[in-house]
Amino acid sequence: MPTRFSLVLFALAGLSVVANDFFLVQIGAQAAILGLIALSLTVLAGWGGIVSLSQMTVAGIAGYSVALLGSNSAGLGFDLSMVIVVPSALAIGTVFGVLVGALAGRTSGIHTIMITLAVGVAVYFLANQNYTIFNGFTGYAGLEAPKIFGLDLRQPVPFFLLCGGLAAAGWALVSVIGRSPFGIGLIGVRDNARRLTALGYNVPAHRLMAHGLAAFLASVGGILLVWYNGRISPGTISVGPMIDILIIAVIGGMARPIGPFIGALLFVLLKTFAIDLVDPERFNTVIGLVFVIVVLVSRDGLLGLADRIRIPGLQRGADGETERP
Amino acid sequence: MTRQVAGHMDKAADNMRAPQGRASPALAIRRLGKNFEALRAVSDIDLEIGRGERHAILGPNGAGKTTLFNLVTGDLLPSSGTILLDGRDVTRLPTHLRIRSGLRRTYQKSLLFGSLTVEKNLFLAVSGVRGRRQALFPGRADKSLYEEAHRCAEQVYLTDMLDKTVDNLSYGQQRQLEIGMALVGEPHLLLFDEPAAGLSPTERTHLTDLLEQLPRDLSIGLIEHDLDIALKVADRVTIMQDGRILASGTPAEIVADEAVQRIYTGESHHG
Image (cartoon, rainbow over all chains, first blue to last red; front, side):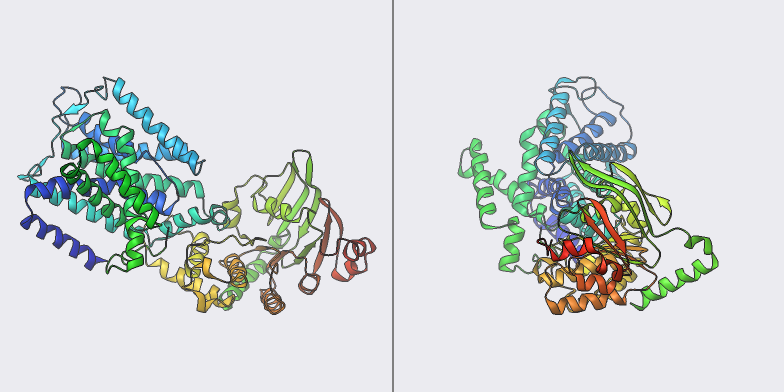
């Protein structure tokens, strides 16, 4: 694991030297960010069998926290130092995710999907109509990544390394957790919650912890997302982006933590270059077709496909999780 | 096996030092009842399983045997009555806390983690009672948990199957794993719900051997349709019918009981 992790870091550093700014930020950083948010679904859905639609909402709550607590161009908020803003945003996003988990925890399957969808839509409309916290339809602009010790994270190369590094850290973290009693137990929650209870596990607590971990990952992604866009508005957390996260996770595969990043990369590439081939408004058709094809040919996205044709380094057991979804 | 025996010998020694601990039976059920709407699945049950006692519960299908087990483990909450484990009232205690205090059970229809390997299934069972249930990161402590899981696999003849995914096991192997997962830790009271269901004659012999080899001071409740297994293993036998206890006694008394003979030689032989 440490070798693989350092290999990834070397690859990121190498990319930052050879690739141009457009690729680093528009493709690399964006895929890393969306991958991080979708990574939360590896934990929740891939392992725990909890399909949540509100992961983009969790990310958005963390993003809005950055906007409101830090400096923005709307003249609202607290203008605190990033040293306080970032940990607070992570904490707020995580607590919000745990609350959603408490709400959805007694349900399963389609009911969980409906509750998390309802939460997401409710937060969207709240953000749209509330001007004291969310600044309504306009949202917040002028949100910038900080400078750390003179290193300007707004510059393409540092920002790419920040996003890529955090994505790699998220991947490594989730890989390690997949081998822990908690991670294996989460698969137990999905396979047979009743038996897990009969082994001494507190299943509701296990689910809540999964929501917390997932919300933390999504919050990291949410903070990076506002720095990437420089702004956040209700459109960032509307139903479209909420579903995009699920699409990314399903296309990439959720059995192992590398899947969401593969899905995010494909999603971003299609979103960026499909407009050269078809009309911009036809992007949904393209991603929809890709989605249908992937779901039809593979049980678990591109990861499942990699397992079947045995791509070195991507197959089962290569990065922690060894079980199929 | 040796580890379990050793664990139980420690406990036996504790009990000798504190003889008052022996006073309360492993399981005491008082006037227990469970209604599903108008159906009285279980009513007015009084039952004790003493320390080290092996208690078979027999009866035709629908007699309420599995419901009784579900009430003891907390999978169901009773409509009336009380349940005491080792003298402690657990009637309203959640299942996972009853398990942590030494209760184990197996299910009539195997409840396993189908996408995980045999090793991971047993590992989950071990870490469930060893207090590493929510450990977020793999740690040094896991090594001894895996070792315990491997010893348990040996006990139920699954050592060669450790890396196999449970969905790929044969039916008999799944039954072995089902039992193995209930043996981990130091159980006080083990409830077996038809462990022999669907097993071949050879597998039944293995199972009987396994049950007989369990430490003598371990209390056992056993639901079994196979009279040969039940009467061979049990110290006491309780017969249930229509949610009530029909008769209770030693295997010899039960075999001689006329009411029981009517059930078991009558039209509902296999229940």
